[in-house]
Length: 244
Image 1 (cartoon, rainbow, N blue to C red):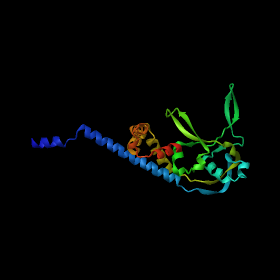
Image 2: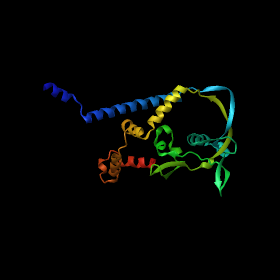
Image 3: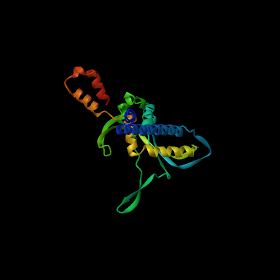
Image 4: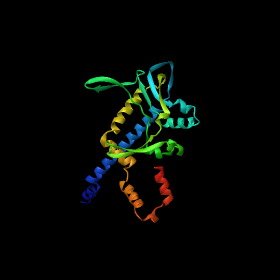
């Protein structure tokens, strides 16, 4: 009788078995996600090897300073801005054309190229390197994102006429060797971690979901009359919203 009772207490419950199974699955996901990041770094850090005979592969179009800005005293200032918002477009021909349908016929029109806009996260990121004088050259705008179903804020350069487009031959001078075994392993792990269910587990268990309640509480606290409970002073709050 006592042996039967001991055997009964040693048996694990259904809830315990489910919990252990979930933990094992999460461990495997963490392991594969960590390995995929390691492979991504290995692929990125493969050194470039110079070619014995460089060759041309189409053309590249990018922005440069206009002639009048080059001759001005602010040439270095606008050159620093251009490094942050410049865009590069590649084409097989110098014309940079694309197909378009008009009245049932396919025609070729020139590809439009614009300067990059700065996202809100890059705007507040000190690593991006925007100085206060450079911030004065951008205008804040909002645009509705149909995928995220919300309005997103970005910053656009207000003087695009200071830059002009230039076309040059795209010369290939280096190449990066390909490791087939590394590429196969990375492709299989990437396909696994990018699955909808697996990606949700990664966002929840590894990165953690955002605390919407905390964000709403902080907003309500600023709007309320209990300013004495705020850690920031009124001057700091004003400077914070001016930077935004």
